[in-house]
Image 1 (cartoon, rainbow, N blue to C red):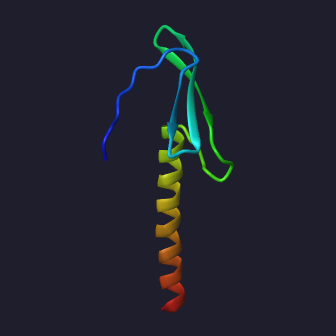
Image 2 (image 1 turned 45 degrees about the vertical axis):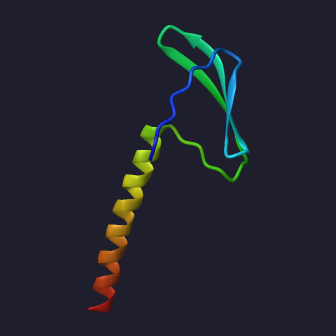
Length: 73
C-alpha cells in the first residue's frame, strides 16, 4: 500500500476512483473538517470504528467456528 500526501485548501477537493470526492470544508487549528461524497453502496467509516467492526467480525467468526465444531461432534 502507498500513501499520497497532498496539500489542499478550504473548499478544494480530490477525487478517488472517479466516484468518490473528498472536500476540505473547514480548517481550524489542528482540526480539518472534510466532506465525502460517494455512492450509497460504498461504506465510509472513521478508522477507529472500522477497526472495531473488524475485531467484532473476527470474534464472531471464531465463535461461529467453535459452535459449528461442537455440532459436528
